[in-house]
Image 1: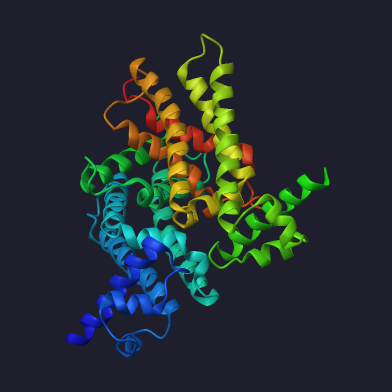
Image 2: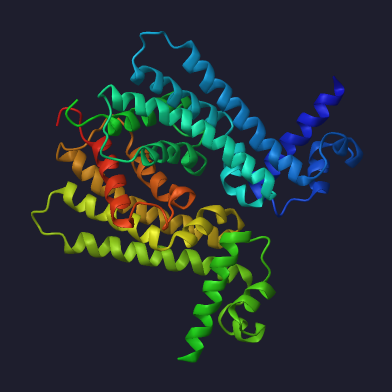
Length: 197
Length: 197
């Protein structure tokens, strides 16, 4: 019980420090001091600073991929693709707002991961994007979505909004997470629709 | 003559190193070695590593703001706002592709700038975004663009695509800069249009 607290406290301190002062500028000593644990306790869970960084990617990728699979599996057999894609978009935007500090570290520090782990993150993001792209492709086959723009660009067009959240979204701002997620989804789905559909 | 080469060579080496290995991991020594100049020659132009980083922001912001002002000034008096906004979007996307490495450093390293300079970058980006927002607001007043989504979010929706380019665009990919810029602009303008317009 107490042990898992140590791991969580260390991860939370790492996210906070990597997000505010950058990964390269943060020492393991600063992380353990902020978490209020000893170096020995931290090394029981994490072998290195790279482990901490990878932990951020791992938990966010696992969470979002799990939710994507769930939404697709839970969709009614007769659900239109637009309805499923809307639910997926809203979910990834909302969870990205929930984990906005992790997201800031995610995109900013990818080049800091050791190479095998950077490759793993790329591979797992690609798996997510492929599943997302398959939904758009289904909408194209069914005649709802435009086909004049490459699928990869349509996918990038959506994930650019996810990515950019940490640059402008503020929880103290006037707009709630739910509203922001639904408005960005609406902009994306509007741009996707076949002009004459 | 020779002197300005030194400054350019140093800046180009800095962009290359900051983009590939990160700002924090790059030493002044590595920059001068890559540029093939002496430290003394570099310090004639740049006082510190922070000067090099700020130089990247300064030149990109100056270039893009200058072009934005030019496009707006050159628009025919009877040009529709959609035509002007399209030209602006295409231009910022194309120049962002031209300077894609600078862009990668731009977004990734903003938190590494010393505070007064970070504030200056924020202020100058805001001035750019305000001018961009004014075009959308004009389109809203003229009845072309939707008004159900806050202006700030519409602006963020566009700049997210600009921002994300360095994460997926490849000059070796199948799509030319011109095509990518026009397709992303088209997606943006489509999402902006008033549903019943």
